[in-house]
Image (cartoon, rainbow, N blue to C red):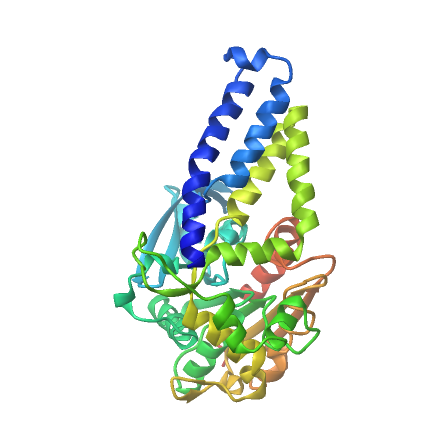
Length: 417
């Protein structure tokens, strides 16, 4: 019922948001007589703020049409190379007409970026992908909004997530692949590679894990505490709802995006309130650069997706309540996850000093689990002054973290002998 109430609210706010958008333009466009009225700038700023608070935020595009690679600006074409009911494997293919550059592009390492299925769209990693494209062939997991997946496609569990990662690795080719997982997927990625190694399959050349809950008992954050202080029945009863009839996934049980978004805001309400007030004042001052930066950030931050209920509840139980991975007790479709079986894949873990989602030590714990990887094929980095997002996006990522990731990939670009 809550989901249906949200849809009714959205139906009411939609026209009001469009009215506010039109009014903001009428009071700000210099060709409009209304823009010359006393107080017009305040009205325009207020209406735009109202528009942005009430509008529907659709999934943004990656918008990566060109990139600088090997000293040239070259075109980038985005395409889906493998489509599953709950995920699309996307590739960003770079093109050049310079024979020298073409040859260099062919020799660049291949990277699979495993994006989180935890509320935001994979486009949250746009800066990650853009930076990687300078020196790599890049694929990414683009998870589908569960409300858009018909119930005829069946449920989607954490085990299915692991199976998807295995399939994507095989599709691209493990023998040439470097995997980067950001936040939540560090756990299923480690499981997928562990299972492949235990079966004797080829595993990726490297795994780079960034800010993930491998061992949530290490320096628990507010996210960890919420999961451990509530029984699984509480999550089932309070955050799981049914997709209403106006979506293809009608009848599917999900953790709705709008509830996840409310949780994101609740973690730092003062910061978001100040950000919106600053946006209003920037509009009054005519500071369009800062105003546009605000729009871009919240266009991404406010765009959320529904998660399949089965997957969400599995994650809460397996990762954050029973700690099955670090305890060595996790079975995926009848197979025990044994990270110690990994021997040839190099491991790089990265944590943010100020990460309030995955605390210090939670990602580094992968080294203890992956005891079969020689010490000289493992590395760890704590990014000073970085929060959760700073490890994979923004200035610190581009100038400090990425060069180390790039060098690690090149250092272990061949299968261990």
